[in-house]
Length: 204
Image (cartoon, helix red, strand yellow):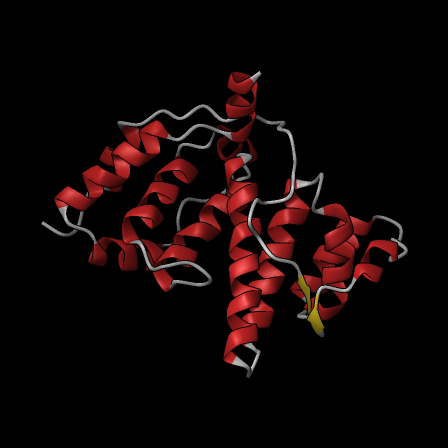
């Protein structure tokens, strides 16, 4: 049976998420700016007042070319900036005519969103559902998409903030790609997931 009861699946899980985590640049993720290869001068960009809020406003207004230099300055220490940077890079990739550059944008963008999701940021975890279903900068992987959907649904921060569940249309797309076996695989992946902060503490 392809359609699965999400309430039953999510109720069977319990994933504890931290509110704070250590930050670092994603390993193996390249760095490019909207006009070409990475520009070291981005590190000298003067930040505006409330830079994170300003950058998010620019992203939501479709001005990612202006937001990216600000977000690069913030992404090393702020999971929300990592998420917004990732979203901007994926958006820029979708509008890029050159296939190689488009892939580079999307690949880096997916890396930043993944980093924020591993820090426990609910928005990032939710975004990864579409990222893995669409193959935006990653290989298409519905099992991985379902894993992040489960983690998002059980994210304690999401519940505290009152964020909605996975959108119905996205959930329907996900359900259509899954079987009972692949859903079980997703549940196993979600159960074995460890937030970045806990992995860091275990290494110390």
